[in-house]
Length: 168
Image 1: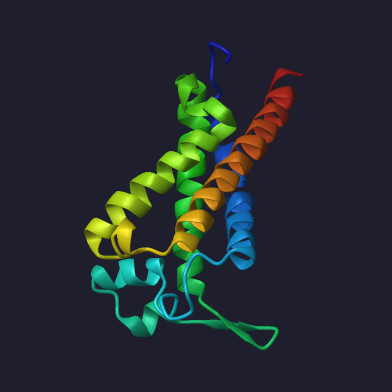
Image 2: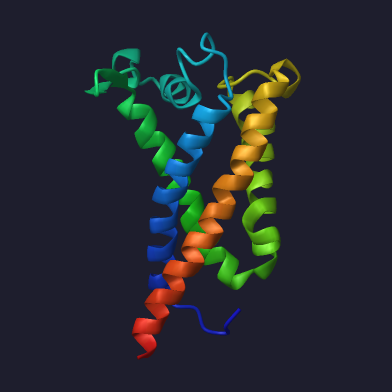
């Protein structure tokens, strides 16, 4: 870790990484879906918004691509979450090296544990951890590891590229 951090570069690197890692996480969930079709009729981003009073007509709004209806509101929340945590990781990890332990994999597991075992169950967005099927835990734990590792790799590369341009 350098003693001097270029905050603008870290913010940009985190933003880029968050979008890419958000795509990776969506792809992962197509390979190992975390929820049953019944539980996914109202997915966690939709349920969270509905808890805050957003009507289901908006939370379930879709756009059509390739003859498939896709939940654009869920994607806004998904990418917002991904990008926010990627920026946090990119910036904070440059000041607090422990955050980067395991190339982000431990941070990803921590985010999974905090949100899927504590915050979202407490808010009634997902069932308690004991009531979640093993498939959900496996998909979400591994997905969060891969998601944050992607953030680590991409944000480091983008940061390094920006810094090369700044220093030349």
